[in-house]
Image (cartoon, rainbow, N blue to C red):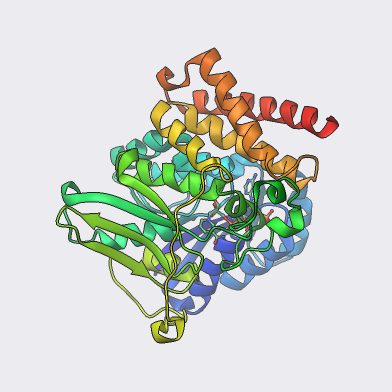
Length: 391
Ligand code: NDP
């Protein structure tokens, strides 16, 4: 039996992972499941899957988690330290699906045991890509991408030489505001941003898709994970979300990965890699689909992509600052304190301030420097958000 743990088990990716595990229950020995506020769901799944331990990130939820686990025999723990301890528990395969920079420390800890880390938490690569990749290398661990675009690129590269890759194209649905004017975007509401046209995902990534910050994170993720230079990586808007990514080779061939928008494909690929197994995802009917539509992204209405290119150019701590400012700006938008376009304004302002004050590109990248940059960027972003909400 394969020992597995799922970090972020109560979220969208976590639940899709559990769905796959549930279908083949006998094959897995579940070690740790972790969650945040939703302790009822965490306890239910931990009991059903016979996990050794259930961990909530929130210390104040420990009592509620213990109550929900009742006399099931599943251990309960809470807090950041408990998450790190769970990441040290031996497992053959660990899903990293906590949302945000909070996923970095448990992911780094998991790599130290030389395991396979299925990485949905793109923020880890954005904030500390070189750290994550070198930690994997020095402990003989493996990182497998779970983001659909990166899983698609990974699959298109099987059997190919990296040196022969000319370019990589990741697609973006364009989100609910693809055709909106700048003026309309200024007034876009939270409810409108939460209506994704093709993917069913957690709330935060859904809003990031509407603002294209999700694609911005993925641009950086592609650069950090595969090592392609920024000018080799392109973004193409493709509203149907059928083609997830394309890899172009030196002979002009373009290899595309197509599939229905269902994250269980990328999760299942990472779960069974290097094999392919049957997965419960719908099959594409291309004749029914008829056409595939593509268009170039508009950098004026969606400045996140331009900011991501600046991050890749600066390097160092720029990714940590970018991601933290984005997370704090997203919090403010979700609290309906600032407007939709204010998110990009805040991120750009924080990046400009911190680049000129601190020379982000030259800073050493360690878990401590990343943590400090993250804290400062969040504080600055919150101050900008407070000013904008009063204005
Ligand atoms: P969700 O918001 O649905 O779930 C997030 C998970 O993280 C939940 O288990 C949540 O617990 C937990 N969590 C929240 N805050 C913390 C914290 N501070 N510390 C520890 N755990 C926490 O997110 P998604 O599943 O949508 O996304 C997870 C990751 O996967 C993100 O990095 C996202 O970018 C990436 N991803 C998601 C895709 C998708 O289709 N959803 C596609 C590709 C990548 P609780 O809910 O109990 O509070």
